Every structure is written in structure tokens, then in C-alpha cells.
View 1 (cartoon, rainbow, N blue to C red):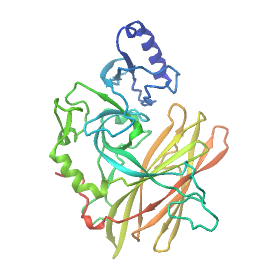
View 2 (view 1 turned 30 degrees about the horizontal axis):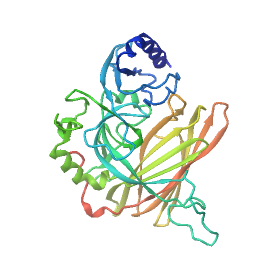
View 3 (view 1 turned 90 degrees about the vertical axis):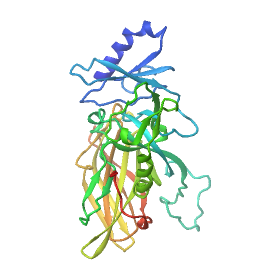
View 4 (view 1 turned 90 degrees about the horizontal axis):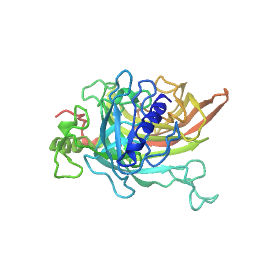
Length: 379
């Protein structure tokens, strides 16, 4: 709320200026409240101020003690309703608020269980794979992007989204060794708020200048280096985003994205590894908190494992109107090349009552074993 109060004062002080010049979007980085969602055509979720009109300039705090020193980052561009964003597109994340840049797109199949099928299944019709209860779920193509996160923004989003969520199996024999690429993320097309900047290095990340080069003749003015193309091709099996699963219960939307990581040997047996990314979004005005998780993990080897525990990744996140989303990644291993996962989260209201929300079922597939070992970002 401190950010909103400051925004009111700043917008009031520049209101006369804005009548004759560009209207600026102001963001204040606060180490306790983090970044807010930037939705330029809507009202601020916390203070209700109207969104800006084009052209829009985004300004960011340098995170100084008083948090009142602002610097221009860039000018918002029109959101793409059709087509995709190109390599080198600068953007703000509409939910977590960080600055980032697009590396390349992924075309995934989105299985949205909130969409009612046009024709319900008959009683005698067998339930197809991917169904939930008696409802058939048909996938549709949806665009996601591999992106770099500006490292200056990572401290402000670390309580809401992991910034080291993209992990790989190590190349050596230790079957449990993992390593991560900091500041790498997957972003859905609708979460991209594009902007442009006059800076030649507008994003701070150790891979920015290894992967991209400044080319003012292009739009956007950042093009892929050969190192990015080679890294994408070599690591395609381990980076590829193919299926996305989504379901809403009691106004809490859960999105799951599974990734196959590879196979290792342990005690003379093959162990198959996956990571999965989960995002929870509170679509209501009610404040709720995630308290427990309950997983069911089925292996085609015939085993069914049940996992219960407090919170997720050591946290019990609160989802509110001001901070509506939480995103994390975790891992699972099976002694079988395929399996399934599904489950529930136990959610608590402010009055102490509870309800369960469904985690959409998803498959664990390992159809990429013939493509070599992951290479991370070694050059």
C-alpha cells in the first residue's frame, strides 16, 4: 500500500505536466511489498487509480532507502493481440512486475479444464487420456517465451516467484545432483507487457551479452548471437515446454507445466527425473493462504505414492488482491519412464475455515532419451 500512496502523490504532482506531455507509469520498488502487477489499461489493483494511456513511459525505483528516486526505463508498446513477440523484445511481467527480455518462443498445448466442452461425453464413451472426471479436455496451441529476468529485480520477486526455477541434471554420475540457471523463466504470451528502451544494455544478466547483440537497424534492436542459437539447439530437449495444464477451484487458478529432465542410474536401476512449475493465482478479493499439499504420484511400474506436507518449498504463501500470485518449481523421480501426478492444495481463509483446490492431473513422459545429456549453458 506504501507504493500506491506514493503513486498517488507522484501522479498528482505531475498531473498538469501530463496534460501536455506523455503520461508516465510510475513503479516503486519496495523490499517488503515487491513489485506490483502492471496492467496499463486497467485500474491499479491496490489503489484503484486508472491506467495510463498511450504512449506510456515506465519508470522504476533504484531501490534507495527512501524509495523516491525514479529513473526512466522505457516506453510501453502496444500489446500484441495476434502473432508473437520476437527475440530481443523487452517487457514487464504483468503479474510479477519484473523487467525481462525474450530469447525465443515455445508453442505449447494448453489443457484448460475451466473450458466446458462443446459436446459432453456419453455414458458409454470411454474416458480419454487427459480427462478430469467425466469432462474431456482438448488442448489448444498457446505461446510461451523463454526469457531472461533482470537481476536487479530478482530480490523484489523472490518471495513470489523463484528466480532459479530452471534446473538441469548434472552430467556426472551423481544421480541427485542438480544445477540451476539463475534468472531464466517461462512467460505466457498474455503476461508480456512490451516496451522499448534507448539503452544498449537495458537488462542486467550475465547471459545478456553472450546471447544478444545490439542492432539499431532491427526492431526490436536486439538480435540473437550464434551462442544463443547453439545453446537453444543443444538444450532443446531439456528446455522444451510442450504441455500446460490449468484448472480453477473456488477462484484459485492452478497452472502446472511439467518438464522431462533425463534419466540416471542409481543402484543398478534407471531413475527418470522431471521438474514441474506450479503457479497459483487468486482471482478473487478474498485473502487466503496455502497451508498443505496432497500429491498422488502414479508410476507405470504399478506404484502409487501419496505425499502430504505443510506448504510448498518450505513456504505457506498468502494470496491477496495486492499479491495475487505465487509460483514455484519442484522435482519428482520415478523408476519408470512414464507416470501421472495429481492432487490438491489445502487453502485457509482469514476466518480459519479451509477448502481444497484441485491440482490438474498431468502426465510424466520421457520420450527424449535419445537426444544426449543436458548441456546447461556451458559454451
